[in-house]
Each structure stands twice: as structure tokens, then as C-alpha cells.
Length: 250
Image (cartoon, rainbow, N blue to C red):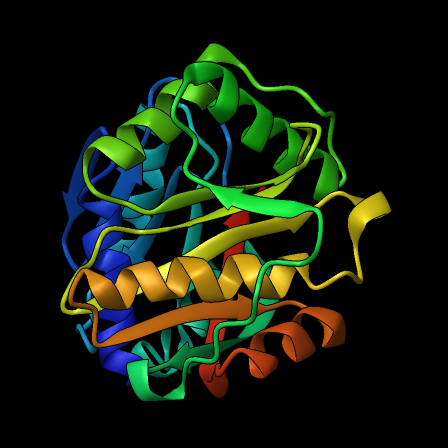
């Protein structure tokens, strides 16, 4: 499963607006944003990696004026962390990743007073991004580039959902990547603080995962950054499988 998930990460990055391949690494980036969560690199699973490869990767990031940053499944590049640390990288985070298969998925009903809907207009898309930004501790705003990014995801077949109250207020959202190697990453699951602990995050996670499987996905995966999200994901059928590592330079 580690290699399958890592291949799906590679596939995700190859769908970025710009892609650079540097030896064993794939760097996917978007010229419209400097966000390190969108502009990053990952290694090909089980590739041989040298110090020269790491130097070339850092140079490639410098060329596009982005922070050198990597995300990857730890088991697929066991010696890479030491090489990156030697080059000055520091660990940003270590997360467990969890996997769900079609037979394990449990889909709860949407909570009372909340509708799960596909964002159909740019206004809907902006509302989803604003809710996600607020839920993750940022400002409740969305730029034109953010909206375009969500629209592009939908155009290439990625599922995106919003959670809205009966009054039409967007209180959360989430999305999944386009299938790669039969696998999709579910991410961006976010609910505004005032609406948490009502089952909205679980309903979003399950509904998005259900769409992944309806499109032919064999597995869906996501990350848990803490015990609260872990419990939400396990309730809808996800189980821990492996580890992911995030590092950045500077």
C-alpha cells in the first residue's frame, strides 16, 4: 500500500499546471500561488537518490522562486530524510495516513439542517475556499486564483463538495484528487469552528470517498493530523496504514 499511495502522490503532482522532473523527483507547481502546500516535490517510489539529485532539486525550486519542500510516504524513500537533513532541510510534520476501500466505507446521513452540494458557480467555489481557510486558521477569504484552482479540479474530474446550512451559508468543504493508479487522496476536509461536532466532517469525508469509489477507485487515502480527525475518519471506514513525512528548506 505504501508504494500505491506514493505513486498516487506522483500522479497528483503531474497534474499541476507546471511539472518539472529532476532525476528521481517530480516537482509540481502552480504559477498563481506561492503556497508551499501546492508547490512541492516527491520522489518516485523506491528510487535511488544521490546527494547530487537533492542539490539539483533545490536548484529547480530556486529557479521557480518557490520554497524547497517535499511530501512523501516514508517507507518509499527510507534514506531520503537523512540526505535532506544534511542539505539543510527540517521536518515540518509527520502524519499517519489512513486508507479506505469500498467494502469498508460507512456513509452517514447528512446532519440535520446541512446539505452537501457540488459547488456549481464561482461564488460557491469561493465560499468553500473561504470556509476551508477559516477552519484551518487563516482568513475567510478566497482569491480569484483559489476559485480557478477549484474550478480546474472539477474540470479534470475531481470531486469537490460544500456543506451548506438551510440558509445557504457555506460552513465547510472538502475534495479529492483525480484517480491515479486506482487511488485518490481525500483532503481539505474542513468545518468552521462554530459548526463542529455535528457530524459534518464525517459526512463530507464519506460522501467524497463514495464519489471516488463510484468513479472506479479501489482505495482512498487521507491523513490524520490529530486524535479528533482520526476518530472522524475511522468512523466512516478509514484505517491507519503508514507514515508520511513533510520537509522544507529555509
